[in-house]
Amino acid sequence: MKYPDNITEVAALLPDYMGFIFWEKSARYFDAVIPKLPKSIRKVGIFVNESIDIVVDKVLLHDLQAVQLHGKESVVFCEELKKRLPKEIEIIKVFSIIDSFDFEVLKDFEPLCDYFLFDTKGKLPGGNGSTFDWTVLENYPSTKPFFLSGGIGLEEMPAVNEILKTNLPIYAIDVNSKFEIEPGLKSIQLSGGIQQYISKSN
Image (cartoon, rainbow, N blue to C red; front, side):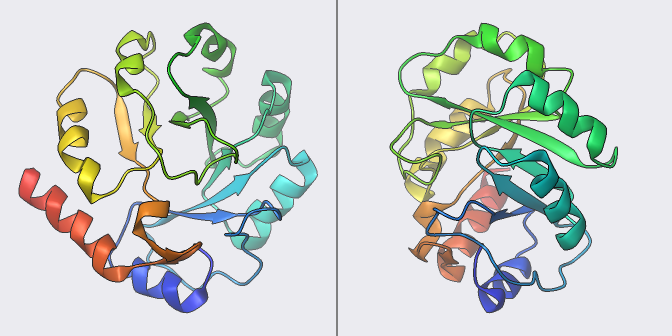
């Protein structure tokens, strides 16, 4: 999310999470005041290879409930961040996939992160608008819940429903670029459409 008026409009749809990108190179870079949101919505700060001090400062400044680490943050970084953040702040570590993935790299992150997020590897750290081969996740060896991300729009919802029928611990579906009019500006019509789709499917 980027624009305060649009944030308020989307918040009326009551998503579980709303993301705010604090990476200056992003077209969706957020540099404003987050409007008051319903308490049920968890505010997520998205960071890319940022310093721990800045992550903690942003969490406190914006009263964030979660941080999403979208860069090459190490196990040591996550360990120190976990010590510095209030205990109730969720840590989401992102891993990008194309056609294969070495799930062994997740082991040391498991005790330090509340969730993983899998998205599509591309030129940018997120927001590339394409899906990866979800069959790769059939080899997911963990019980750690994860967010499924990467180019998910209304056209992908039938495939989303199918993967939700598996035993994979999918915690949330992360949507972004395919619900935008421009980077950071979400279409209320499209965003409401996915809610209706999910409601009909459940």
